[in-house]
Image 1 (cartoon, helix red, strand yellow):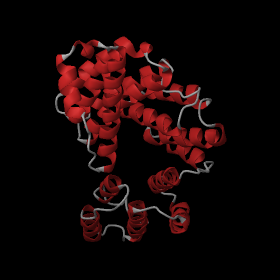
Image 2 (cartoon, rainbow, N blue to C red):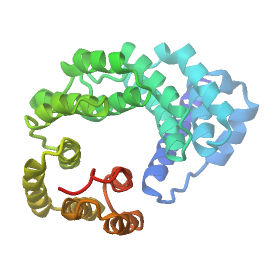
Image 3 (cartoon, rainbow, N blue to C red):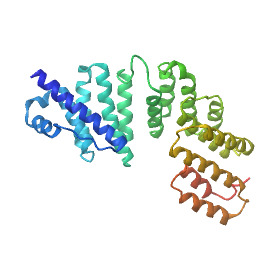
Image 4 (cartoon, rainbow, N blue to C red):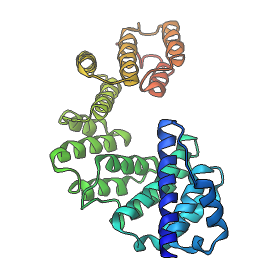
Length: 305
């Protein structure tokens, strides 16, 4: 029976991994034997085994996300049995539950912000999200963004300090400063955020794009127009030097172009501002679209030098 449990749990675990990959890549994966395994599990006492039960509920949750009872069952099973798994497998189980929350968030179900945050928080407290004591920069940022979305400001600041030492040593200071800048930017405390962003030298291109985008918004909000003009030039040069940016290239080049147009708007020219607002509203590929529309739709005098 132990061999049967291992075999079934392994198939279900692999199926969960495939489902997660399918949600990311949109490729169609064939899951051989799965239907037969599901039928067997649902009528067999092996479904009481913690491993089979967890992967079965995880698969059902990921494959039928609208049936929220599967996710509730999965959370309860994780809470009850997480200590029975080796650290690496416990981490993967937590990430399956977190991926479900992200899938739901991407469909607009914002109540899953709290659920994802709680899974991350418990996973960190229990050490299962650390790999040999190390925390990935992506998890560090994901946790921060969830805490900010819930306005858990004190918790977020404590988290950044507490887990700084667990970041990869080579990038530690830059990743810490970048995320602390995000924290202050969202509060908002633009002075602190600006100071930190000016000290950041990031290896990750997407983080670099986001850091420059934040700095752009800060200079605009603080009416530091000379600094903004200089940043727009250096931002464009940075993008031109990068290879393989894909759709990000168009998004950020359009952002730069629109901000330049905003700076050239004659003060008090409502029609020109409304025309640019309509143009931005119709653009499918542009970074910071919501912010641009907010600035263009705001009080006269907020746009234009």
